[in-house]
Length: 233
Image (cartoon, rainbow, N blue to C red; front, side, top):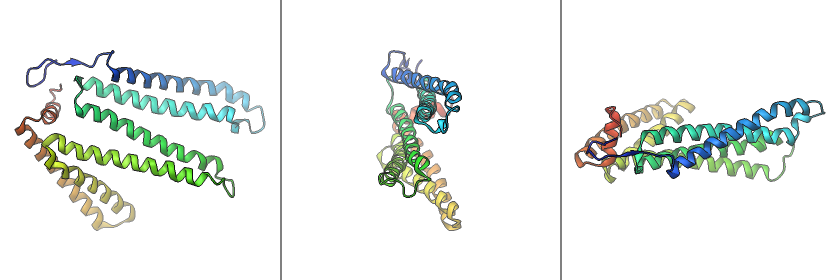
């Protein structure tokens, strides 16, 4: 495989650390699937007892299997697709793509963790003292991680394409997404329109950043243009 500059590049091999991590995610997904299959006969047995299906003996493997299977398959699929798309040595964009995917899945797991006490103690009045701080802590951490990942990826995208002076493109994209979402949720038309304007402006900004980066010969801009034209790396 060769890039635009003619340099020969190797596909990401099985011995690469990222490939080993990818396999770990796959094994985790298979382990989760195994736990879910185990829950079928376990559920039939526990159903013979009063409140057996509400026992930790059944709920723990069911919850753990669900988390491992869902998160494992998502992570394995995303890492596999990313590593198949890029070559060795991995570019900064490839590494940040892997890190961003991991951060988003982790934020979803934090949301899931925040919801567990609500489900378990939702009918308890009052709930244990630790429930509310735990829900706020895990939920808040998930929101912060998810937001930071999206904003960071957007800002880095502009910088990677055109250079440091294009950082504002990512900020404009993030502001557009936030304004559009909030405006649509609360029914504020001016806010929604402002968000759409920001989104359109960010699209134009990214295209100009790509053009600027190609003029400078920036590797990430060349790589993005290759993928856009269907050449790949």
